[in-house]
Length: 405
Image (cartoon, rainbow, N blue to C red):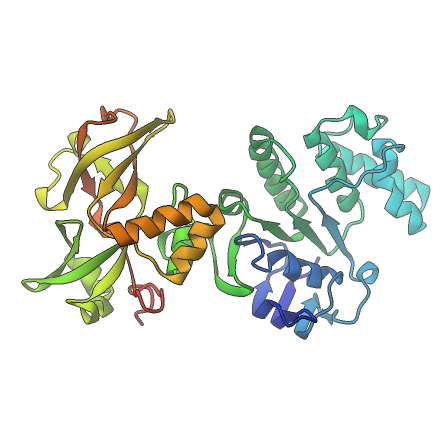
């Protein structure tokens, strides 16, 4: 096994398009790292450069102790798993998994041992004689993984391997892939557009935007301490609410004014992130995660100063929780980061953001305890967890609190 290091890696296409810019990424031996970002952000191009399927314009890629910039793909000792299974339809599961080893002239007894071991790990032991057409989508993806596993590579490279599966099967397969990777302890780079997939699978997650690495860290750190607006808005489902607000003086402390409400910033937060005081009296972008609000009627002794209220525009009962949509008299933050996040969702989302910015009213989402009695058209009072608010500089999109040293 081996670690993978990308050092100042660039990919510039002949037309001048910079698909990957100055990418530095150090992936430890046995680590599972997920590259995530919007469509066209460069994550697949980065993976293909590691695989040798795309030439590197500048920088270096190292697998183990060897720089592989000029090493042919077949000599890099890596195995790839793609979104299309690329199985040979006329071959059995066994022969599909064994095919690459036969080309390498691995002894027959060793091939049989590896194929049957992989089949056991993947739950394919009883399916080795079947043809791909007799398998489900999930089983075919397991065969594709098995073909990679039997090679005993230094690293796995996976490019959206679950995108062709239905939602339920994707949930099942992502847990299986994560389990298998940890069991085999093979260094893995996994590319996906799905941030939920990234958060549930990776030891660390690398968020990429327009070819540039924004932040790489553990899933929980990305969620709790995003370094900028883009990461904040991309990580989390439902997405973080991003609103224009002002930091106003309040005695020795600060309040955040948003939508006609004043929320006190706890003293311990100001102590931990003193740079917030530099923005006193200035506009900022306030981030509130949907799950950091709760129906006030379900919270005992919730202080009045942490409450906001509105009318429920939409109620979505999801069983484990209830998601409500409501209007707030605060402009939707509209920066280049926010625009790109909206475009990634769709044109309708972008128009909604623009309308919110221009009209001074934003749609806000809260994720509540399923015991809430909030109903569409009814008024609701919400308690905001002010210890978990996020603050961003509207000029450069950086997180105000996380840039404090």
